Length: 132
Image (cartoon, rainbow, N blue to C red; front, top):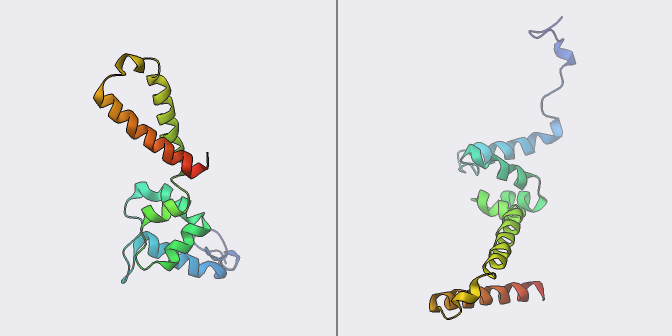
């Protein structure tokens, strides 16, 4: 006997293997919330971040162990902000390189001196964190 879609019901596999039912429950709770917890994903634009968290053992551990998890924090824990950090530091390096061609014209400018002092302090902190 065939079912509605021309397939015998005995030949249909369960959509979720028995061993993954608990993970499906977690996924549903994080995505939709439940009676005790609000959803972790509150906007469809966050699905990319959520997938990064789900692919990370550290991100999953955070979601599982915190009473009210935050997607943003889970994303950082999962290393999701790493590409953003690359972009930020790379852009800063290019901007500094570009400014070097004309910065000598404004060497006496107090506002520029203040900005450069801030930049130097930040670069010193970067050097310290990376052991340079």
